Image (tube, rainbow, N blue to C red; front, side):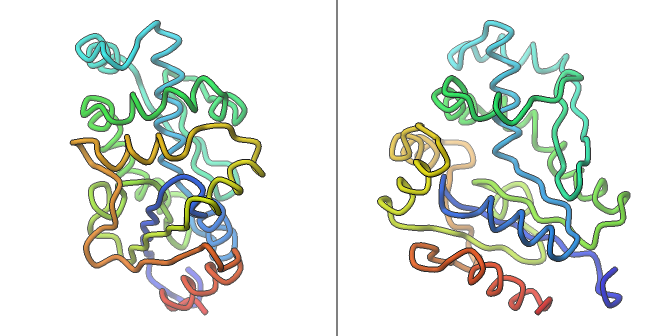
Length: 221
């Protein structure tokens, strides 16, 4: 551990293009934390379900299928990558147009979220096994559902125009407003700021400023 600091967990929540992925990756690299991107988990499940010929309205078939699907973790640098059904999806697959258009439909299903919950929580032990100084997990329900007892919880947000520009710069074509509506109004684990989490407006703050603020807040300055 760095300076004999105890292992700590950080939950980062926020909508698409709020800056949570870039922030989480930089903090993981800077502090030797394991970075877990739960958005990639739902994208991996989406790929798996689409390959099986399933659609979001086939909930019974989805549950039955997922009961047979194994999950495991492959660690690459500071990143924890999900292997689903013994397959490790490539980043280009996870960010494809088809996945962008479909992921929110699958992610809102209780059957899908329940399938991933224990796996996501168990990544804490994975991080300890690999001797990381801590774990930083990003998503839309981390501080409220997945890791409500995380040592530190943050909620990142930005104005819609800023987020749309960021998405375009990333080469992504998903409809942010549509995904926001689906993610924030779903019945199960909606996107929201967890009670007690620290809110950070990233509209005018650059990445370095956000990272510095978080590292100072958690005592790693």
